[in-house]
Amino acid sequence: MSYNAKIRADAMSLNPIDDALFVKMAESLKVCQEMLRVFLRDKQLIVLENVPQSIVKNLQGRSCILDLKCRLASGKIVHIEVQKADDDDHQRRVRYNSSLLTSNIADPGTKFRDIPDVISIFISKFDVFKRGKAVYHVERIIKETGDKVYNGTQEIYINAEIDDDSDIAKLMKVFVEDSYYDDKFPATSDRKRIFKTTEEGVNEMCEVIERNRAEAHAEGRAEGRAEGRAEGRMEERYEIVTDMLRDGMNISTVARIAKMTAEQVMAIGKKAAVF
Image (cartoon, rainbow, N blue to C red; front, side):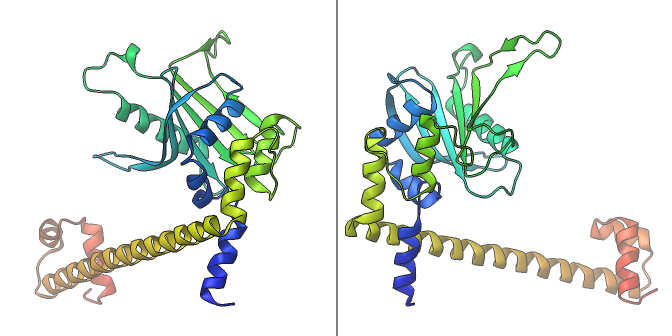
């Protein structure tokens, strides 16, 4: 199979559970509104703004890219992440993304009571909690009394593994299977069909896949260069430590100059057969 044919086959195999197609689906405000009306069980819900791949900056640490951020007419902010692989601590992922989003939407001087509510929706191919439910609403409670308390955040976990015949489960079939529900989810089904069956849509997905792979390759090369530079600096540092030891400098002095512990210096000396 040629490279172009392989890219085309990969593009046509995608479903909305895949990041590449979800982002294209989420460019449609109608799709976002239709999905959120189902997820939040609110047929009157209005989406005012939708931002796929919303970058949330953290100047002091790890930033993140939200698969989708929406602003509702109610003033609430919703962010969605789709995940196929069960390869991380997803509750901590949701917690981190929600807290980072909250800090970015709160202007300096905003009173805490005026910070917008944030709803985190985590969509997965697998059952996160393995309790046999298609959807989980995680809430805060007071352990001593069992009372629910609300601090302006909600966490909703939705999965495609459990089919309870609900509208959410039916929508999840559109996310993970080559199926459509035009009567229930016309906007979502129609947009998915564009990227799965039309020449223009498939070609657009091919471009997305090629761009994503090129970016991933560039990031990999950059990380490799950074790791190489770090390794080179470390090797140079080890050589300097070894030279100082061979010149007869005592371990404590070498450790102070190299900004290492005495144990680290001794380990380098033993490896270089100085001792």
